Image (cartoon, rainbow, N blue to C red; front, side, top):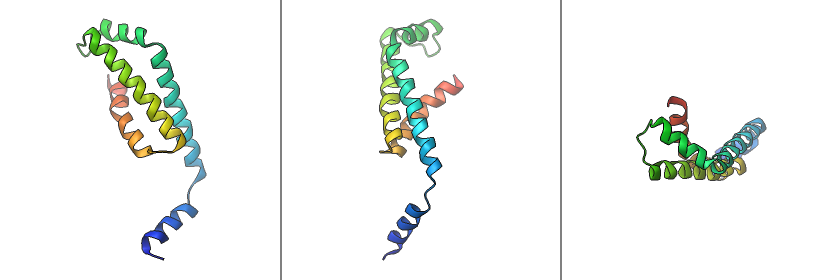
Length: 102
């Protein structure tokens, strides 16, 4: 048994189940936020245009709302089922940073 196999076996044996519960809950929460964004895309687009924080035109506001909704839907689903969780988390970072600071 190689060192890598020993480390992998140790990680499988000592995996905390409560972390899986938190990951699944976070994925479902992000996925549900994506559903809310997609279902209210016209309202969010108008909100972006009224506040004019980013100086978006109508097309850019629509594109931004659809990209954020798609990323939340796909990323939340991937996080909830445990596939490509690091990639799904990384694509959420810019969106969440903009949401927190702006």
